[in-house]
Amino acid sequence: MMLSAFALFFAAVLLGMPIAIALGLTGSLIAWLSGIFNPVLIGHVMYQGVDSFTLLAVPFFMLAGALMEEGGISRRLMNFSFALVGRMRGGLAQVAVVLSMLFAGLSGSAVADTAAVGSLLIPSMKEKGYREGFAAALVAAGGAIGPIIPPSIPMVIFAVIANVSVAELFLGGIFPGVFFGLVLMAYSYVEARRYDYPRETAAFSVSFLGKTFKEGLLAFLMPVIILGGILSGVFTATESSVVAAVYAFVVGKFVYGDLRWSRIPEVFASAARNTAGVMFIIAVASFLSWILTSRQIPQTFARELLSLSTNPVVVLLLLNAFILFLGCFIDAVSILVLISPVALPIIRSLGIDPVYFGVLLVLNICLGALTPPVGTCLFVASGVGGVNLTKTSRAILPIVLLAVLCLALAIFFPAVILFLPSLLR
Image (cartoon, rainbow, N blue to C red; front, top):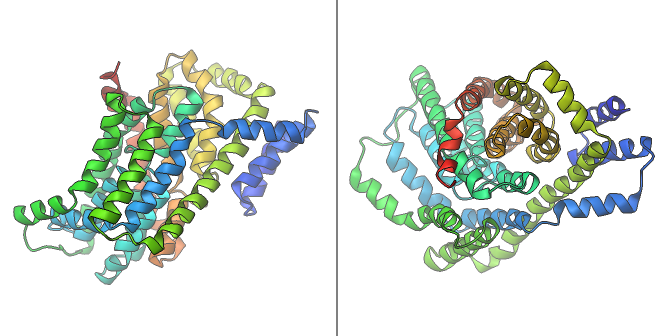
């Protein structure tokens, strides 16, 4: 029965059906075969899945990201990135990575970061002679850093599911996110040497760097305010998302002056559309998770997995390999909501820190945004850059390999994730 249901799900996905609909059909089939199909119950479970104060952070972080892009913050961050790394070989590629890391500390959304950086830099990289597949792939990989470096929308969702501290998850993502960014910069340098990509500035200038930093200072203060407020207990993660949205509006409208009143309705509408898509997936995936739990699927899966090994490292490797496979077909939020209830009993029985596992899970699903055929960041980068998806998919393969090695490093060396959260305990 369960195999038939999951076969239906993968068939629906491969045929191009929206993920949320495929999840709903799978859950409904399992419920019908189990004799517990009830439309009223389904609606109630879906509502319960999104009825969370913490999840209110999702729409406000979405809104904050949209306001920042419209309010001129993007341009000032790009100017600073040019001043910082433009002198390096393959300067535009280095700027793309640094800019992605800066955006990651503001929006928490991989798709939003990819779209913002891609629209700014991919056309320029193509004009400067960069391989267009490499340009789009690099921007897609940089966008995947978005949910790793705080604030992070997937980490907020996992915190709700696992009942763990959002602040600890945010802190746990800092080192892995920065490390992956540095790996991308090193890879970009190797590519630049190989294909003789140009530098963007003649020489490094401390005065120019200081000027661009001063112009973007208010943008740099935003992640400091968000993390500082959460860690100091001034406001919760949800309240920090509201602070971020208000801050982005005030800076964009009244300080920089780039946010026009006529554009505000579209900014709100864009944030609302993006939020609706995420929340609908969470609602439907919550229903499927409830059905699976009621049929004892997580417990069965846990027994089968633990029968193979009770070594925490081996179990984490097996789980992450399975999640990597799912990431080729399912979007990040769906994997997060589906896997967490199944995996949490396993990792807790082995004494694995759920915060550590949560950060690993976010790292893994961010890889899924880079792997075809359902790599959302690949689609976005190719779309905004006007690059053939096949070229982008080929160019992303060595980057995916590097990302897997970063994930393995985090598995074998938990301190990479747990060092900063341990300071709160």
